Image (tube, rainbow, N blue to C red; front, side, top):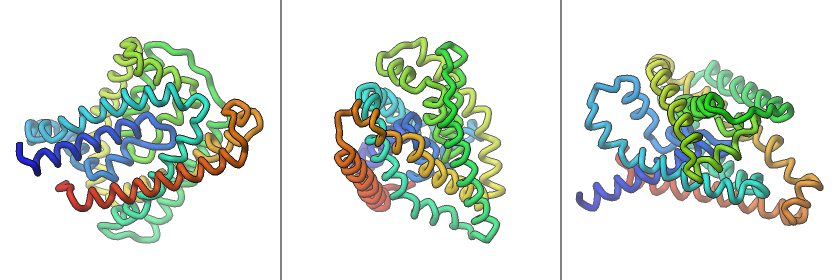
Amino acid sequence: MNNVDMRDWLIRLFKGATVGIGGILPGLSGGVLAVIFGIYDKMLSFLGNITKDFWKNVIYFIPVGIGGVLGVVLFSVVVEKAFGSYQALFTCLFIGFVVGTLPSLFKQAGQKGRDTSDLITMTGSALVIFLLMVIGGQSLTQVQPSFWAWILSGALIGLGVIVPGMSPSNFLIYFGLYDKMAAGISSFDFGVIIPLALGLVICVLSLAKVANWAFAHYYAKMYHFILGTVIGSSLAIFPTVVFPAFTAEALAETGLSFMMTLLISLVMFALGIAFSYWFSGIEEKYSRD
């Protein structure tokens, strides 16, 4: 493997790790990050017609898959350790990352043209996902962990891969399963990992062909829908996750003052935006996707 091939292999590994993190991080979507990193269309095409160029695609996605597993496992450890008291602060970092990529998503959505109906689709999807997430955040349902609950959780994560913009972790938080899932993954509890993986694989394989057809026939509408859900889910994470961190009870739990929490949140948000611009430059310079 020469230097160029190794560089591309490592870039795909990093993309996979970031997509894996996005799959379990509140406020983000693995599918959105796959779109941002230019692997979504290739992945959907492969899953929608799995026998076409099978080995070529397998070789391409090996580092992506390895990175995805590493991202999920390693970040589950971070989630378990840090997100208990500092969930809102860390979420600001990654929401900043998403905000920094909105210009590239808007550009990609208009690659085949856009009209008024596309902008209406974007606005409508943003409004709907925002309202759904805010309403869900106000009426939490505690689901007891079980084999079928983890199957459902895996399917939600798979849906986040197939439908960019959907943040499955938000729904897992609403169901009271998020912290338990992170703890199970980080401790290699196969009673959690196996049904999660089954649900994810079943969902992805079942819906990939449908999604592939939709993008082939309604490119602009689908991508503006994606952009809208990114905007809506990013906005909704503030009242559902970030703002509650500024209540007296939450501040007492973290041991931070209001001004310190605000300052750290803003710094995290700015760092996320800066990182997204930096990585966009790396992607533009080196990626052959």
